[in-house]
Length: 117
Length: 111
Image (tube, rainbow over all chains, first blue to last red):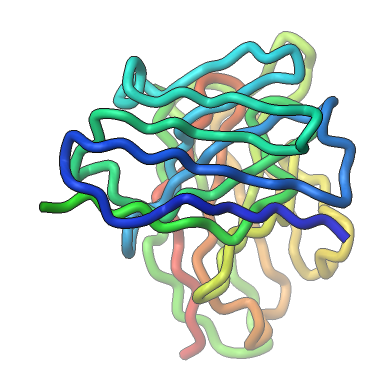
């Protein structure tokens, strides 16, 4: 059975930082593409960042320079460091993975990030 | 960004009747590898998304065969041959040829 478990969400003030984590089990971590996809309350889905098996990274324009995705193959974990957070970053953040880029065959349950004063 | 336009926004359906959702892309989704990068997801209320269909028409393991995908280039369709109560939720298309973008979603509900 595959499990993706996110953690690290919470309430943060505008301009603050959070670090999200996603621990994976039940699949071959090293060879997979890993992403963060977010969903604002009552809204649709938005791809945030992706990290390739070779650690190459890509980001949506609105988070470039503020968010950093990384992976630790020894711990089967991916991270999303989020700095300079803004109210429009408020969302449920999903950890997502596939064996190819830009698709998802497994999703986590999400961790909620709320940016508000 | 590539814009994915879904219709309708809301789809009330009678149990046992068919349903069809359209997804139109602002750019062709056919890659240089000949693969068309179009995926369909289902998100039931209170749950994470679940992939139903990848590369236009390939059903994922465990997905009932009442779900089918079709289309080419810039126009795609997800069909449910006979809607069941468990099919209630929001359906999203995703293009993965460029920076990934989702359609706005179609909410399927029972009449």
